[in-house]
Amino acid sequence: MFDPAVETLPRPQLRALQDGRARRLAAYVYERVPFYRQRMDEAGLHPGAVRGVADLTRLPLTRKEDLRASYPMGMFAVPQEQVLRIHASSGTRGRPTLVGYTRRDLETFAEVNARSLAAGGARPGMVFHNAYGYGLFTGGLGLHAGAERLGMTVVPASGGMTERQVMLILDLQPQIIACTPSYAQTLAEAFRSRGVPPDQISLEYGVLGAEPWTETIRQDVERGLGIRATNIYGLSEVIGPGVANEAVEEQDGSYLWEDHFYPEIVDRDSGEPLPDGEEGVLVITTLTKEALPLLRYWTGDITSLTREPGPGGRTHARIGRIKGRADDMLIVRGVNVYPTQIEAALAGLAEASPHYQLLVRRTRTLDELELRLELTEEAFRAVGEGVLADGDQRGKRAVRVLRDAVQHRIREHLGIAVEVSLLAPGTVPRSAGGKLHRVVDERTL
Image (cartoon, rainbow, N blue to C red):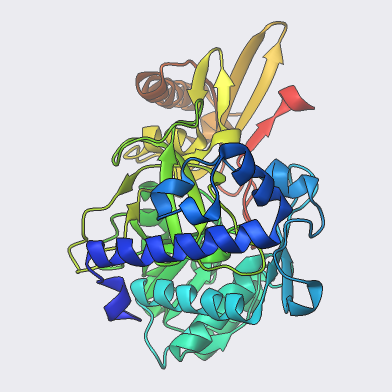
């Protein structure tokens, strides 16, 4: 552990710490952020009446639209001259949101990333290969500062240029890598194409995040790179990466650092709080941020929460694997579908690689979902002639049998019919270092 005293703090003491910080936060935002002053006035919640985090749940949810409406820095709580750094969200769904950091915020950012890296297997003195993008995206610089705080040697490789990444890993012999899960798969394929087996790759641990992924992808990455992989969670608006991370010895839920971030799970439709263990949208209140404090921020991420202490002694709440984003959910013929559900349905099917793409289209008034599934090398050698246009009849029969098996699995798991296209290895787009978008929704085009 990076900070055992805090990470194993008994829950009554942890709650007392949260309550004290919530009281200071209420007074802080009421004085400095007009948006929250109005929210608190409308809710009849004067700062002096806030006794702890439970009282803050009386306030409405803060959403990304609120940040966009105040673009660029209308919700900042400090003047510009106190902001040492600015990051931004990707802006893939509209205008990006800007995030500011004071000196103390940057110290907190480094601290939570150091904790997360330590939970993921990192130790002082290790060589850390950071393949997250540097720039306005928070991933690269956030993990970089955390690794330096932990006492590691940092290789700031950034994203992309896969051949150079492979060369650096072979030459510098890092023990730990951070990147998106899809890019870890890309790197594993690059090593395989060079004839470098996993046991000749120096990497031991991977801290992967920035996109939803499944146990199937974890197993694929661990086999391909010869590592133990953990999930890191974060989002730009809250602070960036380092909000939560799995413990490598457990790989069972990501510890969310509750001394800095207070979590809730709410119903995706009503916004009402849900009890621990139930699946809903994660909402976070930042307890210690100075430049951009957020009260009850709707992350949009679908997960669940447990406050049961972990087997390794950590007492902070754990969030389950992110199932997807509420706004990424596809509704196909009245059925809710997340890409990760497709992956779960295909788990254990030996012929299916972890590379796929979903295409949603509308024919007249009906929605249609097509799964473009890439076969493994072995499966393609067995039935590949049937995939190709000039395949013989026997090959085509084998493909029909496999396609029917895939369709049956998805119908059993999701209750919907899908069209399945089986593709040759290397056909589905790969990550070039950033987030991989697996869904093409032609209904929005």
